[in-house]
Image 1 (tube, rainbow, N blue to C red):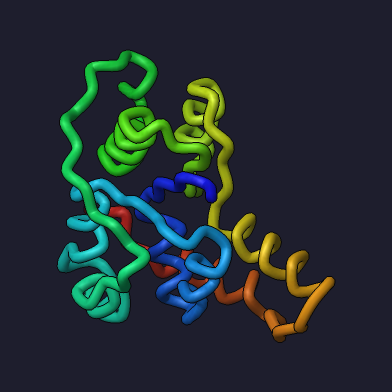
Image 2: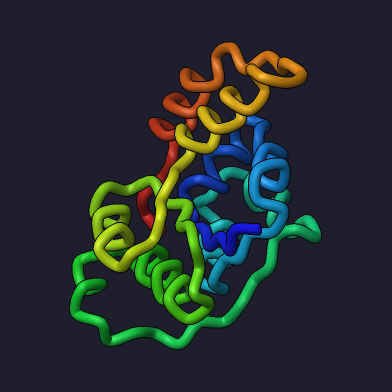
Length: 153
């Protein structure tokens, strides 16, 4: 079983488009730093995201993180810094992250990475050899959710 840590973006977008249920099918458990939890609950986050995180599923584990002074993390936003710090602390295998800068740093730190679209692609690939599930329009819904996302956190 992979040890997976998530940044805000992939969870946010998958909740918004109604496909967050693919995450436990892929990873069983996902860890998020308490800062990411706070971002998902932020007043500017969509109501659907706030409601979902307020009733967090059993597969989502929220952990406190001590800020890191790692210079490689300086140019990242707080959620990305926190997710990567938690990943380093736990010895995670995979980081769920959407932003390029954060993904590049994660790769430099030796993590595997995937994001919202990568998660959807993994499910589509897995289902193509087993039971099929309709994911038509998933990419379009992710892009629509991304355009409506507030970056004011």
